[in-house]
Image (cartoon, rainbow, N blue to C red; front, side, top):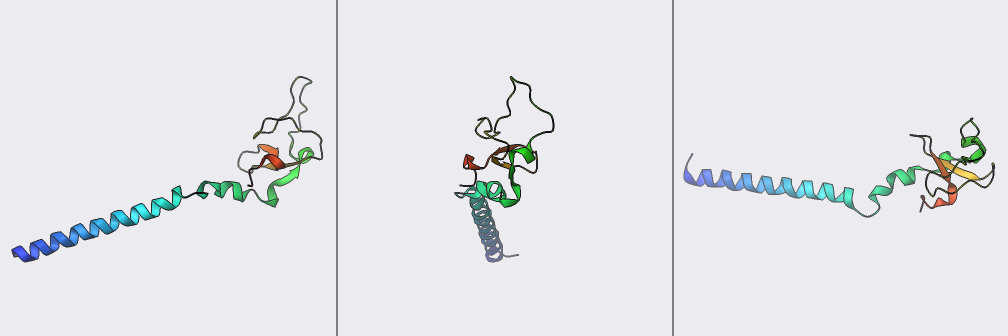
Length: 101
């Protein structure tokens, strides 16, 4: 391999590496874009909307122990209040807590 061929191969390798770096940066920029972290919140659609009575655990809390929203930590007002249930863990919170935007 002559000097010109070696130089051309080296330039091609540097260009390929630069293209790879640009591709990685472009792909990772999408993960950091505004709103990209809202995917899980957007997944909390109508299927997760139930009443507090439907979502609560079968055990009744004691007089001192009140069930609270996992999001805002406020107590639930009534059994027919709308709450959202997180399917993965079973936590629930007020539908008005603002998670949906």
